[in-house]
Length: 167
Image 1 (tube, rainbow, N blue to C red):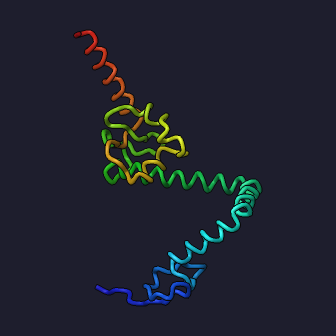
Image 2: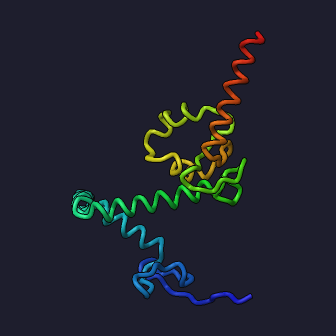
Image 3: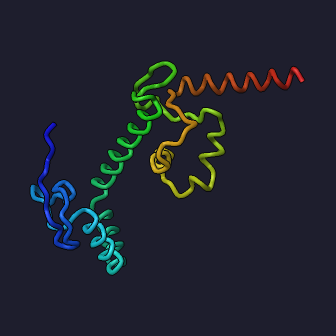
């Protein structure tokens, strides 16, 4: 096994670290390690918060197509990642194997999806997929296609109807 033993000293914290802990700027690694770079960016943002917010608003206004395209691609990648996790390593329905992305969604295994999506817990997230990712993929979910979702719902409603009739 070959290991990369190249190291570099951070010009901010003066600690010797592996080269891979230094972010790239173009083809070259910068002088600050990742941790120091993040701290520098945070400090700059705190000092220049109003400017940064105004700059971002202006950029988004002037580049609407580019921003919309970026958001679409980012959300698509996140959806694929989440569906693949809950599809047991495949971006496909866990029941029937359907793999068209437009047909797939996340199923609450124990029900209660509508109530959960409308809860205060999810109010600050712009997507359910982002929430699942930021919660580190909690248990109780699976990937299903819309047909299997509909069949599950029909079976649940039929079972509830039969339970009411038997009482």
